[in-house]
Image 1 (cartoon, one colour):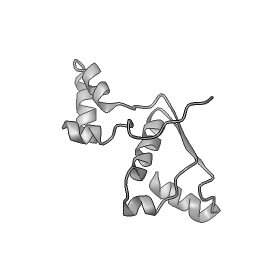
Image 2: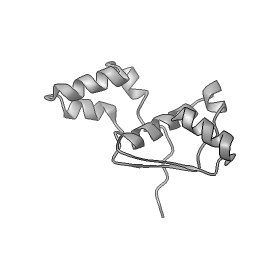
Image 3: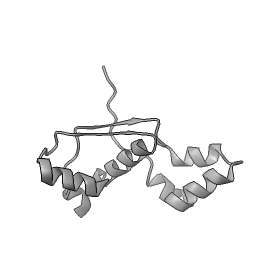
Image 4: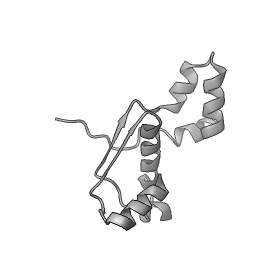
Length: 104
């Protein structure tokens, strides 16, 4: 996703005039990209924030996904393999700290 953003910025020079939009896994990836702007980092400085992010039916709470599917080994394995197994790693991918705007 970051490589695509970099290419698009270079090709079209749209600055902050863009939205990250995704469905399902695409929504999850869009919000994971947004996590780079949570703190001050060299990676965050290399990318301009979007005007907004629209995620539809993505995975937004990894701990809830893991805990709600305790009887399904596939979910346990997927979360562990992709995001790690400790609470600190899983909390690092939570979206609670991001500012969320709701329509008026």
